[in-house]
Each structure stands twice: as C-alpha cells, then as structure tokens.
Image 1 (tube, rainbow, N blue to C red):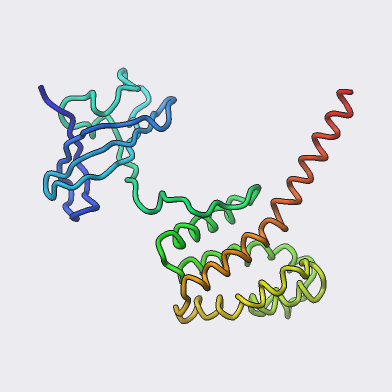
Image 2 (image 1 turned 90 degrees about the horizontal axis):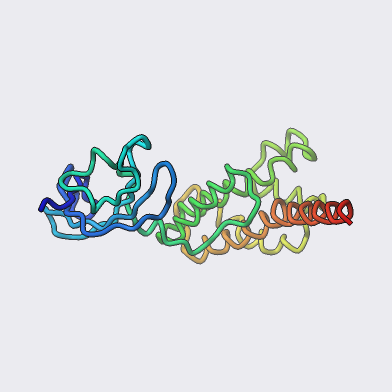
Length: 227
C-alpha cells in the first residue's frame, strides 16, 4: 500500500524539494479549505518537521480528506503554507482592540522577544509607539515637534498632558535605550523587555481601555432600549 508523501524544502537540513514521509496530521481549521498540521520525516536527514498544509482546491471532490489518507505524493492536493517553529510560541499577546497595522507590528516584536532578538524587538515596539502617538502629535503639535525624535515627541505629549504622567517614568527609563538599539544594535533582552512594558501600557491607554469603555456604554444603551 502506498503511503502519503510530501515534497518540500527541509528547514532542518536545508535540502530543497526533498521527499518527506507523512506520518500523521491533525485538522486545525475546517471549512471550504481545511488546514492541517502534518507530521513529516525528511528522507535526507531523517528529522521531523510539522508542516501546515491547506487544501489546494475547494472544488476538490475529496475535500476534507486528511493528508495521511492520500496515497503517493500529496502536493497536488495540498499547498504548503508554512511549518511550526519558534515563531508559533506565543509568550506575549497584543493588547485588545488595536488597529491592524499596530497589531501586526506588535506581533512581530513579540516573535522577536520569543526568539531572543532584542534589537529587532525594540525596533518593532518603537514602531508601535510611533504609530500610536501619531494622531496625538498631528492634532496637538506644531511642525517643529513633528520633525523631532520619538523621545522629544513623547516629552511633548507628557509635558502637555496628552499622555498620562504615570507613564512618564517608565518611558524615561527606556527611551534612550530604545534609540541606542535602533541605531547601534546594542540592546540586551532586559532593555527590550522594558520597551515591551511601556508599549503594552501605552497601547492599553490609547486603544484598549477607550474601546472597552465605548463597548460598555453601547451595551448600557442597548439594555436601556430593551427595558
């Protein structure tokens, strides 16, 4: 009996378009194009990789059939969309109700923290801060302030009370380190964690808490209308 095989690049040994023996699979998403985490063994290095496969064609008559149920090479039935790695180890979740672009930046920074890459993490968290304060700067600052560094723009927002003063000490202890990391690549993990702490608090104040209050008020109005 022919067993299922997958042709893919091996992230363990670097072999390209090598054949893997498919040993098992588990559906992680059902629907028109089901997704499977699929356990495979590389024939070149005999090491395992868990690939993420998605049904290649929702019109496939055998849609929903697991990768292990196909004999022979399964690439004609499934697309390889990735593999499970340290990127999938979630240690830091983004605050709720973030704009899509800031949410994406935060997640990238969180992956860098997980992967022990403090300078890359710092760059992404600084970008989160830049994006989060942009509307405040546009609304309240003149053109001179807008052109200045992130540190100066934060100082302006604190001085003018557009950001809560209880965040200022946390911001003061990380701003210079953040600048150093962005330009010199000299940050340690502790510095990146400090920057993460400030980023989380800032995003909570700017996006999460206001939206939670808005939703609570909306629910209260609905209760009043239904009473």
